[in-house]
Image (tube, rainbow, N blue to C red; front, side, top):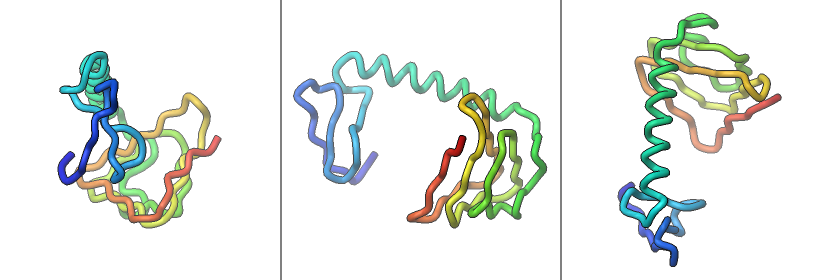
Length: 119
């Protein structure tokens, strides 16, 4: 991240900033942070590769890419455009349900909007 002012915690395992909520982690932090970050990146790659190969289950280009104010059920949603969340959106399902948004464009969320997980 650039443009932020970070101060390392006394443990040197993370940093803080008045410009963010929570902690910031870097591969140059003290152990075990680098190992944890490496594992997180591997998990991210695995999830991305799995999601990108999933077949569409809920139609194409829902709402023309404007999905704000919608409630989505579990499944795979495919868009051949940008996805715009210009109002609160709700994902409704159970604890083990999967929601995947695939797009050839960008995912954009307007300021002051919420992603609500229901169920």
